[in-house]
Length: 211
Figure 1 (tube, helix red, strand yellow):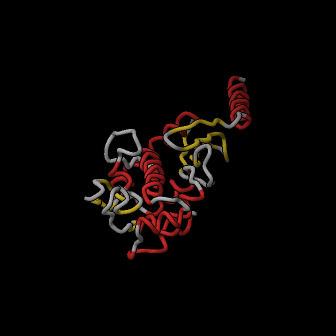
Figure 2: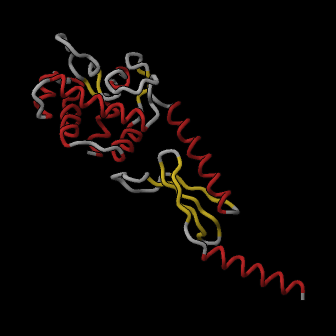
């Protein structure tokens, strides 16, 4: 009698778990969704709210919904640390240059204006030859080179913040010079003498597939 009652309670619990609504929450820069799937609890991470791209980022399982979510959070944190450790160090930028996959993820998430996108595509196509600040301004439709570079610097800061690739803690986009070099060498320079702008190869590859 007791055994039969335990089996009934187990079946009721299993049914309740299967009928439980999907739990959604934000963590880090991702959207986590967790629920009962194929006899177990599964938590999955997707691009965050507002992202222009979709797709599974990471997945974890657990005996409970909470356990699956905790396992996924730990997986995401380890993934972030692993990415940082594999970045190519750039002494001029005083930061690790993210890999193509990281840049692609960032470009799919942050808001990019058409002018910014055009400048990125033009810089990517120029490759190692690079381009002048005047050419950049013409590509973006700006009257002056300084206006063009300021707009790209804003975008560089957004990328740095999204990927946690910041080299310092300043919040003013116009003061965060080193971070602007995540897009191109020479982008942080204003004034009369301006070097050629050369986009990092990792970003070139990401631009080719993401914009």
